[in-house]
Image (tube, rainbow, N blue to C red; front, side):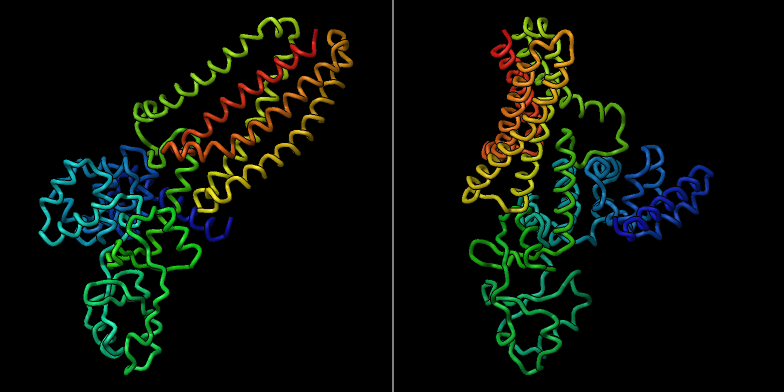
Length: 462
C-alpha cells in the first residue's frame, strides 16, 4: 500500500479519535469547529464511521452552508436518514449550490414523494435543470453528466473567446476544454484551454478545434463511460444525443465515483450485501438484509445434502468417503470462483464480448484440463498412499484413490467451465452475476463433487 494511503488512513483515524474524545467530554463548540474545518468528503467519512447516536449529534453540528456538500458523499442509508429530518425547503436551500449532476444523484436516491416536495420548493430554472437530469437513468452517461458547459461558435477568434471566458465569474470545475457547436447546438469538436492560451489571438476557433474528440452517447452505460476515460486518459468529455446535439459533459470526478462504486458492488455482492449498506446500521436493519441471503444459501445446502442422501448406504459402508467429499467440493468451488471472478472482471471493463467469448471458454477448458489432471493425480496418490496403511481400508486403497482422483478431475473441469459461462448466461437473463453467480456456482460444484465421489466409489468399490 502506498505511503500516502497509510498516512491518510492514520490521519483520518486520529481526527475521528479526537472528535470522539471531544464529544464524550461535552466540548461541542470544539467539535463544531473541528468538523466544519474539514472538507465535505471528510465530514461524510466521519459521519459514516460513527455509531448512530454520535452521528446524529455530529450532523446537528454541521453548518447549514456545508450540509449540501456533505450529503452528496453519504451512503444511501445515511442520506435518507438525514434528509427525512429536513424540510423540503431546507434541503433545497442546502443543495442549491451543488452541480446539477450531484444534486440529481442525491434526489435520485430519495423516495419520489420527498423528491417532488424538494423540487416544488425550487425556482423554475433550477427545477427545469433537475428534471432534465433526472430523466436519464442513474447508471448511464445522462445520469452522470453535468449540464454546466461552456460553448462557442467556430467563426470567432481566440481573442474573442478569451475575452468571453474572462467575463465569466468562474469556470465549472474540472474545465480543461470548451466545446464548439453550430447554430443548432450540434457538437463540432473541442478546444483545449492550453491551446487557447498558446494560440495566436487572431486565429479562428475552427483552426484550432479538435474534431476527433470522443463524444459520449447519452444512453451509454456508466461502466463503459469509465472504460473510455481510462483508455483515453480523459479529464472531461462531452455528452451528445442521437442527433449529435451537445447535452452536457462528464468529468473525471464522476467517473472515479463509478469506479469505486463498481468495486464496492463486486466485493459486497459476493456476500449478498449492497454496496450502500451502512456499516453502523441498526441491528434489526442489518439482520433483515442478511437474512434473505442466508435463507437462499440454506436452500442450496439442503439441495446438496439431499443428493448425498441418495448414497447413504455407500457412506455407511465406506465411512471414509465422508472425509473425501469436502476436499473435492472445495477444490471445484475454488477453481470455479477463479474463472467466475476473471470473467466478471473482464465483462465489467469491456474486455469480453460475443466475438471473443468462445475463445475464452476453450482457454478455460484447457486450464481446467491441466489443473484437473495435476490435482487429480496428487489427491488420488495421496488417498491411495494414506489408506494403504489403514487396517480397515487397505484392501480398497486403490479404488478410493481412483474415486477421489476422478472426482477431482470432473469437478475442476465443471467448476472452471461453468465459472466462465455463468456470468454471460446471467447477464443475458438480466441478473447481476456478481450477486448470484457465486451462490449458483458453489451449489453446482458441491453437487457435482458429491455425485462424482460417491458415484465413482459406487462404480469402483464392490
